[in-house]
Amino acid sequence: MRVRELIAVAALVACSKHHDAPVKHLESDVVPRAQAAVTIDGNWEEPEWSHRAWRAQFTGSDGQLARPSSEIRVLHDDHDLLVALYAADENIETRDAFDFAAGPVSLRVDATGKLTPAVPGVRAKAGLDEGTLDDARDDDEEWVIELAIPLAQIGPSPVAIQAARCDVPKDNVQRCGQWSGRVRLE
Figure 1: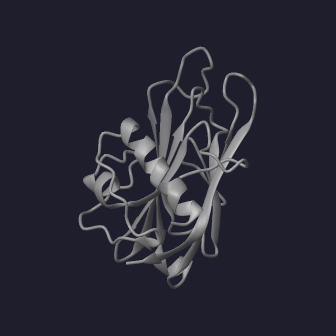
Figure 2: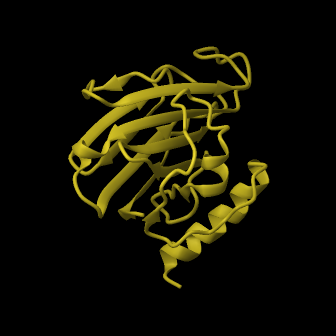
């Protein structure tokens, strides 16, 4: 196995403790077609996300799993590339964001689901779990972004995808993680 595949397998095993769903390792570069509807609502509770989606953990500049943890999950349907971005975060702030690119589509989506720039046809929703936005007095847990990007905007398969995130936890030390690669749509 290649180093990237070993890291992905290790990340999936580690991730399985956090997420209740069983981890299924899919061919490393194939994004499956969703078999059931996925609602873009900031809640990745549909079984498609946990049982079918292609997924990978972000890594830091040292090649190790990024801390705080970040993950990408990807599916597609007949019309859209469906993306879920997960962020562990002890202090969720409005300025927290993912930078994301799929083919020629490049955007930033913050913890409220705001897209910059606004890309016609792209839908995004954010979901917060445990905690409150912009309140450092409490201990937050995580947030999720769901995106739907029209396939017509990203071009033919294979598609180059990049996702990155930096965070400043309560210790005030900025930490960054990213994932990038080319994927084929099933």
